[in-house]
Image 1 (cartoon, helix red, strand yellow):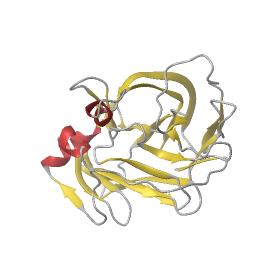
Image 2 (cartoon, one colour; image 1 turned 90 degrees about the vertical axis):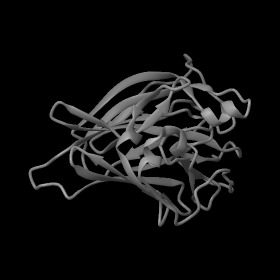
Image 3 (cartoon, rainbow, N blue to C red; image 1 turned 120 degrees about the horizontal axis):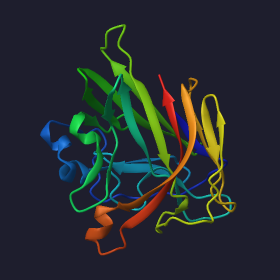
Image 4 (cartoon, helix red, strand yellow; image 1 turned 30 degrees about the vertical axis):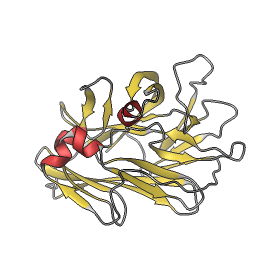
Length: 254
């Protein structure tokens, strides 16, 4: 999955509590949302943009996101794509990979429960134990391009074993040091192609493009607001920490 805006350029950033390059984690630490959310990673694009987050994949700061950077109009960085709501489907079974926090001790979904391994080099990589097979999830920021690449791989599965991957992008489309709330100004329109989608929630910001190397089984416009997403680290620091995030559609791939 390739994610980018119409155009991007940038600067650099430092992340406190970051996990060092080349570090790896495994075991119970990963399945504890408090401990795994305290470990942060960052990948810069060399232009001033970046992708960053936590090992649990639960955002804890307002600037955490998979596509963050300045635009041709605004020098300040904006968070365009916060995360995906990610799940694997096999028959009637659903297995979450992503995570978000909504209350003091309420996380939904809880993808970290299946997390078995994380390593930061050569790029952030997660491994999950799902329905008896390993699933690898990778995030790579393309240097000098303002593009984030995401890849999901099933490892060691029998030939007749298949998952369907469902993704729902969450799009704050706001300055990295700000927060957004549900509003009537946002344009919910989405343009769907066989291998992805594009949308432009606000006229003053560039369009976002999600592109896949394979055709989607289903791509359904379905505008939804996720209300009261919590950023736990911001809360601890005394900042405003709740946000509403818009999602324009769901995508499903085999």
